[in-house]
Length: 32
Image 1 (cartoon, rainbow, N blue to C red):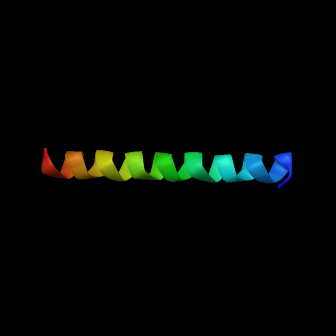
Image 2 (cartoon, helix red, strand yellow):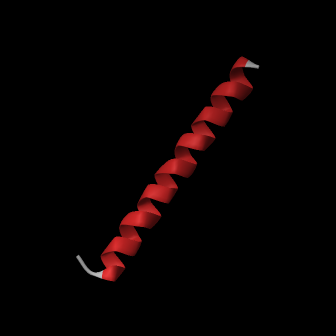
Image 3 (cartoon, rainbow, N blue to C red):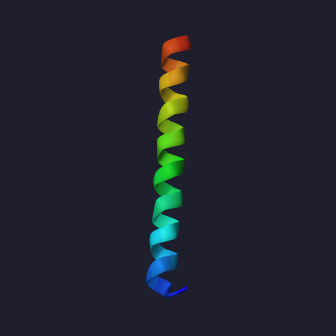
């Protein structure tokens, strides 16, 4: 894998993490 590909993979993982955090935040907002 090239460094560019690794960077894109890391960006994808970060975006997935942000999406999960957003979903958790929405869940807590809906529950609370």
